Amino acid sequence: MARLMDIAQLCRSKNAGPFSLTFDFMFDKVENYRRVKDSGILSKALIQKLYGTPPDDIEIFYVEAARGIKITIPRPMIQGDPEDSDQYGCQQFRPLAELELPD
Amino acid sequence: MQGGMLGSGFVEDSLKRALEWDPDFIGCDAGSTDGGATSLGTGACAYSKAAVKRDLRLAMLGAREKKIPLLIGSSGYAGGDINLAWAVDITREIAREERLKFKMAVIHSEQDKKYLKKKLAAGKITPLKPVIPFSEDVIDRSEHIVGMMGAEPFIRAMEQGAEVIMAGRSSDTSIFAALPLMRGVSPGPAWHAAKILECGAACVTHRLRGDCMFARIGSESFIIEPPNLDYACSPASVAAHTFYETSNPVNLYEPSGMVDTTTAVYEAVNDRVVRVTGSGFVHADQYTIKLEGSERVGYQTISVVGICDPWLLSQLDDWLKLLTDKVKVRATEVFGPEVANGGYILHIRVYGRNGVMGKSEPLMDKPLHEVGLVFEVTAATQDLANGLMSMITYLGLHQSVPQWKGRVSNFAFPYSPKEVPRGPLYRFNMNHVVEPADPYEMFPMEMETV
Image (tube, rainbow over all chains, first blue to last red; front, side, top):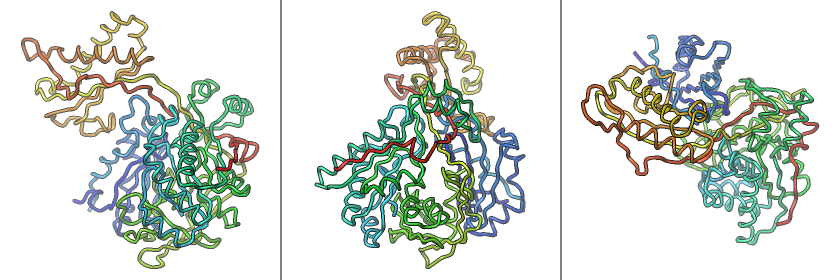
């Protein structure tokens, strides 16, 4: 069983400004990009479950030219709030990277 | 051409090679919001003076040698007036040391609170998504507020003969779109190329360190070529760059409109050069300027401790809850009820469990063998934060663990003193745009001969 991190060339999370958090999944092979896209595994329901984001606030983009998938959500905490643990938002991707893909 | 992020470094040979390709200008982005709201709050640059001076010196020497404009945006990291003055001083210092003579434009981006209040009252300030609360009070609470300028103030400075432009907060792309737009290049390729350039070598296939990037920009297409011969761009690596730190990977919003890359075609010219055609740009009905504000939340003190006592780890959350309650009781005794009830924020990060992901951590129930705790207290003054932290660490050090009989000591402190004052804590407080009367009124410019 392959995990997303096994077939992506990059799994990344990062601030998109101080109020948004964005996840990028980049692939060196277009078939891996399509495999993840077609599996539908990166769904709004999953993001809601993992990060508590209401579905209407979740945006998911598939860009074949870049062989990339982007998911953007409001930051669970505004950057720099006392409870924010990750100023750059750069270590929030692990649960998604470890997702197991259907065969 | 792009000279890398000012202060984060580029390879001198790459700059030299790029200069041999006869660029029309050199641009450098010098800032970001990524490092947090402190730079805007205090006016301090996130990079050292030595690092900024090294990069700026090479860029200035290159620009003067080729007699081409040098455009620096987001000077001093946050681009507020203190940040900008700091960066302008470095520019003057380099000019003296290198005996350079040039016309310099200094473009301010710090915003006047009265101006913003008038705009707010006139309904000319509107929220972006995600929406956060905004009022006159937010404007008043802000330590500093900057507007993010578009390409127009840069163009005006060049039209008035500026050879070095030191600008406050700028959209990363306006720095690079300005000269192509001034020369009449279509906005699609000009803005899209600018977006690819703004992070320097970030758009290569395997980035080893920060470096320069080179683009040849025309009205039909633009070509991206890394001046570092160890680097290569591929169609996918260039296309992928519009993902980096953006909320939307195909549409990018600028003061004057939206860059549309959905129709862009990326093709390899050779194994390290990429041509992009079909970039679009949709002009906005209303010109808008994004605001960034920073307000002081309080003063902070932290303490770092390690725990590996198995009994304590087996009941960590309950034990920490009890500690939090005891702190409140003791804070009432020492500092009074006003401080104890809402006069401070105590936050405890548990590294080794969910220090990074907080409430989103799915592996909360894994057995622990060691955790690092970061205690963090935020209060109205540094003295109060320090006093509260010494109370917290003392109470926690000896708070009983029911399975042990006798006096226990629970914290492995790696440092003495155990409390680390962090100074003022700042947060960003606005995600809004202003409708200015024109692209210049928020960005006054001064010209000087250096």
